[in-house]
Length: 331
Ligand code: 13P
Image (tube, rainbow, N blue to C red; front, side):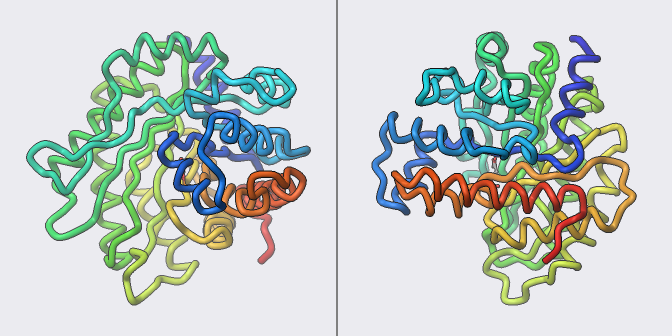
């Protein structure tokens, strides 16, 4: 493990005013996205869509890294340049989603466990050769009747730490993503309690499994009201609850926190990040690692063929979130 490499990469991923584009939708997830715009889910279409995103002029100013799906890591752009090289040449760090998705948790089938540890050490070597310098693993925690159980939180935390240890061994920075879903009808208070329990368990396991905290990036949910909750907390309440929770459970040795958007509106995702950065000084850099909140507008504008409109929409959201990452966004 080369600590210096890990620390430098992690710091570059959360450099001020820049964040991460999560473009690592699996073939199944991109199918859903493409269906919403009536585009067929074929390899050439996936390649053309990612090409549009990654050739957006100027997006690198606000984008420190891109998370790729395995297929994209080994694909070339329309001009023939391998995607990882195209990104690296712009100063954007290529990363790779390495988990294999979720399955029902044995013994608690309404909860999920993330798979993908078997063979991961060997896969990481291949990904590094292809240019990946960081990785992502997403654990999913569901709020509901009697859940999450401690059993689910702990098995997912254990898997996250095992993944992170293998990444660091290979000099690849792990993005550690424990996502508490925001789809239920719970209040923001419940989200705060569950997010706290989750982060406590995750950092406990990371420490036990000897993770270099300075060489990782945390990708958490924000503390929000469940989507189906009749009372929706306002932006300031979300920002305050999220910061309170992070300060309680995330060690200051972690260089940066890059949030997922999780189904928030594009503008909420930007506004929440900006508000939190305005509430500093903070012990870690706070930025974005958005999927939907960076891509939804671009996907719609592109619609399968309109490259210029797609790029324009992508650049706009990248710029807004870049400003928010520096606490300089103006509503
Ligand atoms: P969203 O921002 O759409 O939640 O996606 C981020 C991500 O990478 C989830 O794993």
